[in-house]
Length: 246
Image 1 (cartoon, rainbow, N blue to C red):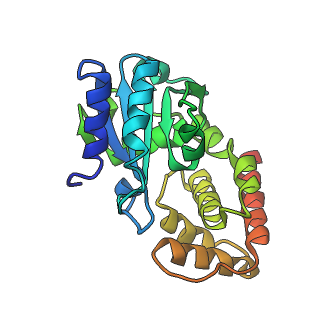
Image 2: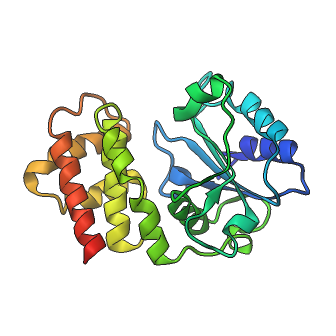
Image 3: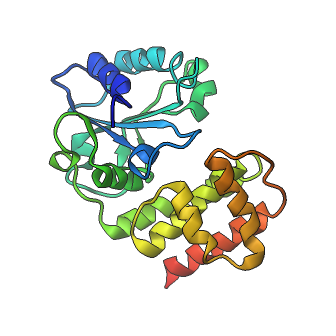
């Protein structure tokens, strides 16, 4: 894995202290088949206690000028308190989340707060599956596996919000829906392009073109996605609902 994610892990250790940082782990594209041109650096930190306001401000102060700036990749940093996720219970609680889609809020002074986060179910599954420590022991030493039923609940909880974003974040929404569908069907969390490849083999022929273009763009291609995104998304949601209610 080289030094990918190490800068973020060291930053977290500096801010929360070595005694309170139990481990830091790379996840996302880096451990699910390799980084793509627009992939974020995804890091999970597991800490002993909830971050203070001062610590939250310190992390933001360092992440805002780093993430996506000067050629650096965008950063997604998630922090969980170990006692919030071990023993596992649903829905899980996220103690701190930095992502650039929230940059506007952060620049206005909003601090990342503790909140219930169903998205942690697939995230922790990826961390355990990827087994890529940056600091600390292997993730299985700190985290419980997510039961399959809770993984499915977690990955489907955000579908309404995804569909609301379809018009202005089309590529990511289509690829994320493909990943949800794949995970529901196979029980594996896959890279977005791999999930799209799986979905393309199962979508009705008339719904495939826009997802194929989204996959190509994710892998570094250029060009517009064109028409058909809404129909493709609805077809995948229908397939997801059939699996959920089977």
